Image (cartoon, rainbow, N blue to C red; front, side, top):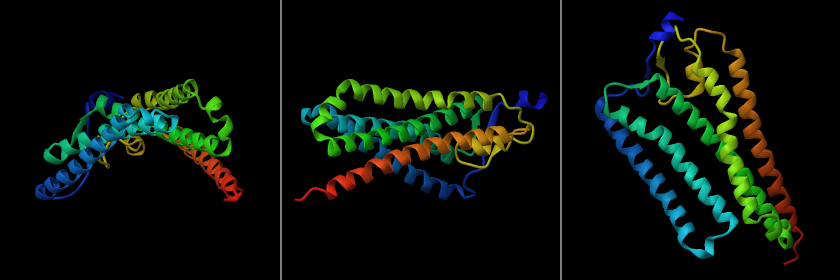
Amino acid sequence: MQHRSNVTEFIFIIFPLSYALEVILFHLFLFAYIVIIFGNLLIITVNCCDLRLHLPMYFFLGNISLLEISISSVVIPKLLAMLLSFEKTITFVGCFVQCYFYFALGTADFMLLAVMSYDRYVAICNPLHYVNIINWNTCFLLACMSWTGGFLIDLVPACIKSTMPFCKSNMINHFFCDSSPIMKLACMDTTFLQLLDFLMFSFIILGSFIITAWTYIMIAITISKIPT
């Protein structure tokens, strides 16, 4: 516990490459990041400016684009800074903040994908009731539930992990603060936390997959019954 109080930063063990190759990787990741940012900003801008796209499907698509920007911004800027620096470090607080936001935004992303699949299911399988079921109040409610759910679901595990004692090492074998590499450094039994992560993310991933798969199966069945 005394050693835990001395841990103020973590060191990333990322790419065992020469500085010249790290500079090349920097430009590759920077190009990818710029494409992600401007591509998704373009989608959001077009959705806002074109009145013809003020529909639930494009509203959810805009939310997905905002999530993609946010998730990328949680990881890539810090990675770019490390590729140009000889110090591959992150502060103790910054590490857990990065970990929390990465998984919270990822959870919201999965939930929104399930919501989008439900929107398409209603539009194709129940077109006459679509306007009544998927109205703007419902859209805002589903979007808020996805965003809020993502941040609330990951809050308790993130708080527990931030209080773990670290006495093994402060070197993370990764390029960002992922949950599993962090727990490997803790000098305590993390079996419960690993099980909690597994159950939580299995529920989120499998839940969104089941909803998406079910909606598209029903869509396929409905389309197959259309005679023309």
